[in-house]
Amino acid sequence: MAGDQSAGGVAHVRPGEGRSVRLLGERYTVKLAGAETGGAFALVETEVPPGAAGPPPHRHHRTDETFYVLSGELEYTADGATVRAGAGSVVRVPRGVLHTYRNAGAGPARQLVAIAPAGFEAFFLEAGEAPDAPEAGPPDIGRLLEIGRRHDLEVPPPPEQ
Image 1 (tube, rainbow, N blue to C red):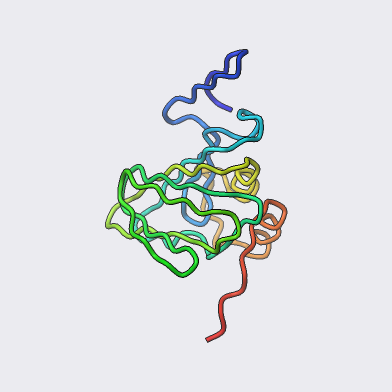
Image 2: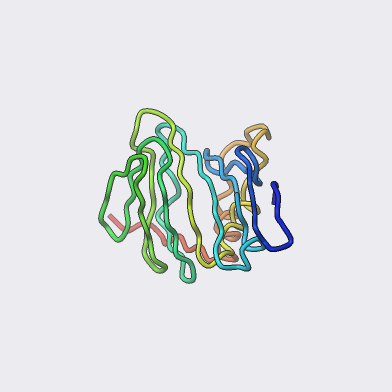
């Protein structure tokens, strides 16, 4: 972890610190990983560009996610219900619930994602690319799905039309 951690376990992560990766057009910064919280939770900052569709609908079987919108406007869909959430809003998605989000505003959006228990943050770090790496073309969906399976991420096939 970037930042300071005392012998007593108090962590301080400064603005701009954390491990950042780029994945599917978004920037994910792990501010606190499970190693810093005894596995209780992880905290990830996400920067979502305007027009970004977000991740495909997915679920976690062992992980709850809580999204706190820092800026912009995001639209979350979970179990078929959709809610628009602006800065200061909180959206909680319990384990097992199919969900996704997208940037619903005209500008960039930022959110903090609390992941409990910790572990899923490792997906971003394994699947993502360095933020300054050149664009490598379309993502390798098979690779992302395989990494996801190892980290409690299930992406069901889209419903038949």
